[in-house]
Amino acid sequence: MTTELDADQVIRDATAAVRKKFSDRSEADVELVVREELGKLLDCPVQDYLLVLTERAAKKRSKKDSRS
Image (cartoon, helix red, strand yellow):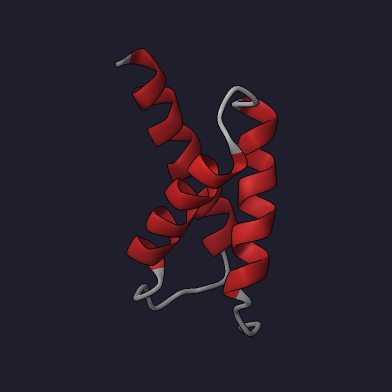
């Protein structure tokens, strides 16, 4: 059974989780990364794990960006 996606809630939750790990980043910067990563996943047929996948992608990208 698939639940209805609340993209705004995914963005809020993922942004909060990423900010815990990357507290030196502004909320606006983290939210932008989260929105972009979620946007890449919205067309996937399975929507049940978008929060986890978005959070992981945003953390990975933030980690990569901090090394640059």
